[in-house]
Length: 195
Image 1 (cartoon, rainbow, N blue to C red):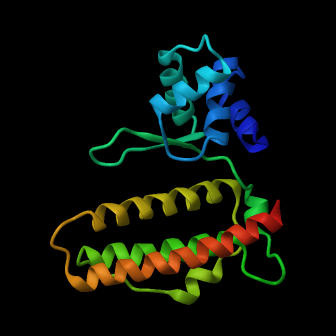
Image 2: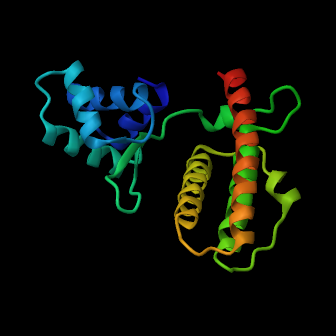
């Protein structure tokens, strides 16, 4: 289990039961964005006596504790992923003189907010220099930064699924997706160096 996850379990006062650890093992090792049914089937391979209801109960407890994130796309079953990963200290490190991972995530979130606002016909004042200004985050800030990024991604996907969007909104969203891909690549390289 990821050490950050274990620490969060203890902080939340959740016991390290075999069913809970099995659910977390699936979430950490079977890829992100999995449906509860997939998690239950994969967990049964590890713990054959695990009941479906136990998986749902543990997912709900883990979501309530902030250890697991539930994503609820419109018209689809809920998806789950762990929030474990880099610590705030790792995300705040400047590796090789570059911007920190936290700064990349903040910058990416900033332009996704811009794209979401533009696509909805709302005003947005871009602050590109400001979006890079913060390099260091606390654990609480880091959790919020990650959550904001996922929220903006979800909003962009919802926006892109609408019919009749103006061409400039579609082109802007596509450009931002390409820009996000660049930064996600940079983040992956920084993550590999940070671990």
